[in-house]
Amino acid sequence: MRILQGISSVISSIKTVADLHSQLSRVHEQNAELRARVGQLERALHPEGELQFAEGVYWLLRDGKRSGPYCTYCYDVDRRYVHLTAGATKGTYGCALHGANFTTAEQNPPSPAIAVSGGRSIRRLLRDW
Image 1: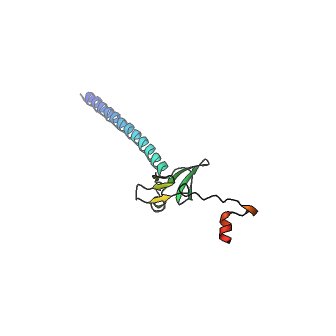
Image 2 (image 1 turned 45 degrees about the horizontal axis):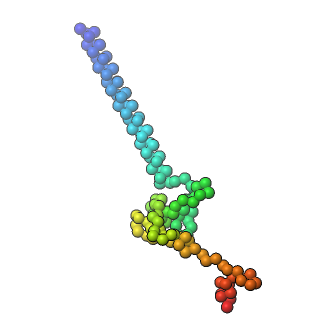
Image 3 (image 1 turned 180 degrees about the horizontal axis):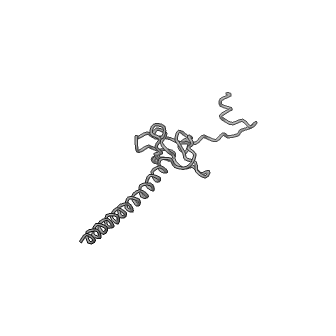
């Protein structure tokens, strides 16, 4: 009789160990999923590349290519990379998060200097006049 009780106790312990092993496997899977998600969120918060301020907005430089623009307020205050939404005209952007509007050089490109006699531009001629 004692042998049967001992065997029953061993079987119960084996079942408990198997249940614990199953739970541990699920915890390992959840841990791997959470770690992957944290990595995704960290990459979204801190994209790879060099942040450059130009034309009144932030741009992200990666492999010589510029992406963006990003909101200056959102980055300066909250360290968040918030893409600006293109406006109705070229070179105008808005931040959907706090409503600020931005204008880049695409909207107001610098006017080219037109050369006239003597190599002086019209702008310089008018200024000197």
